[in-house]
Picture 1 (tube, rainbow over the protein chains, first blue to last red):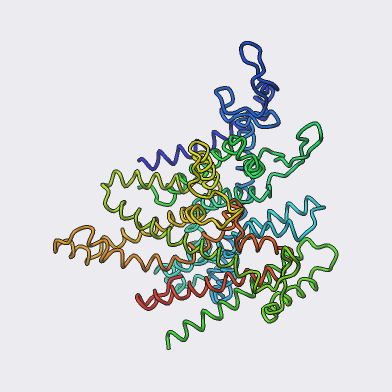
Picture 2 (cartoon, rainbow over the protein chains, first blue to last red; picture 1 turned 120 degrees about the horizontal axis):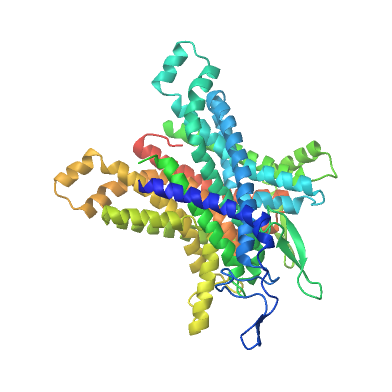
Length: 295
Length: 289
């Protein structure tokens, strides 16, 4: 009972966040007044200029460019969650399909697959994506971002393939599979009638697990200024000092690029951090329900 | 005989893993390189990577003041990072044991609360732990002029905060593993018998359940190492630690040196993992994946 409640509250949180995010972009954006450029008190005296600390009007504060952090976070929610969604989907699809092939046909080659899996797991994912920044040229943006996306997918596909392969192999030891085999069912029949239905029930769990992992990875990438949501340069002041900023207000970018301000204006980092923690917690609640079943 | 086969198998696996790493790094080095044809350059890079083991004594790294011999240069950061890693793992183990002991002793309602709390703590990326702790230390400093622990590694080697941050994630992972293993052992006959003999809960936990659950924990060692290593990278960056990962990032443009350095980190942990597996095999007679 309690588990079910937390499952639905997790789901509700994610869906609500996405809805609010779309609502903001298409409707609310034009109606919300931007924070004032200078802040005066009742007597008309100048008391503050951006960045403002968190207050009742601006729950997560206002950043250096005079934008409300709370609405930035809401705006960034859809990019963050949908990019993570796409990556997790690709990971689960490729991992499951390759995993079935590995578990049914390629089990003889596990002495080869296991070392590859170990190498992929040992190589820190952040470094894998970073090496792209250093080793290759960044001229062709489309190529750059697609290779980056492919790498983020691949780094998890290989461990996932191995995990699915192991589960398939375990499942194939069941008596009814052995019986089906003896009665003349070939491997393709087994996959279609037994293995796919078995894995179908587990796919949603795999997906949620990958979602959590991807979000964790986004935070780490953001710290190293690798933004999955794109990067742009913004003029900071009248002298034209340039500063990198997250194009889409995608959360990891906001955290990574705001880190230099940590000691000055913490709220610029704290807003997206809270968003990350709550989202990951929501997915954890969903994942636990899927994992432990309806108990 | 069984042991020889086991060791032989593991060595072959080690070799294959090292080759895979070499291929992976060579692939990354060439994937965005437009000046050369992909395949020949890639193949040459694979060869360079693998040969660099042989020329290990003659490799040089760019340091602050010119070139350094690789083997002299990496020793200090290597020891430093390994200290933090080892400290973190020990701390994680102690923390997890304490937590699962508390969990075991609590009434079941509070057990749920503890689990719920840890699920939430487990949802916090360690980047934010680091932010939080650095801010907290500085806040204390501002209030009391007392620097409890060094929050950055700019001027000297810091240990306390990095080790603690590193320990959190693996500790939660270990705790979950321990709880599962405890629950599995709890229903077994020898525990029932011990209870029937009138032995106390603590005694049963430490003399019997804990010892048996340790096997499960040992066999998960590799997973925990992976976890800790990817977090150490972030920790070194955010604490400004001049450790092995900061060094690795600085040589990321030189594939062969990067490869050798990464392998140097991989090999000892692999051997440690094999030792753990060997112990499990010796005690239980079954090989866990």
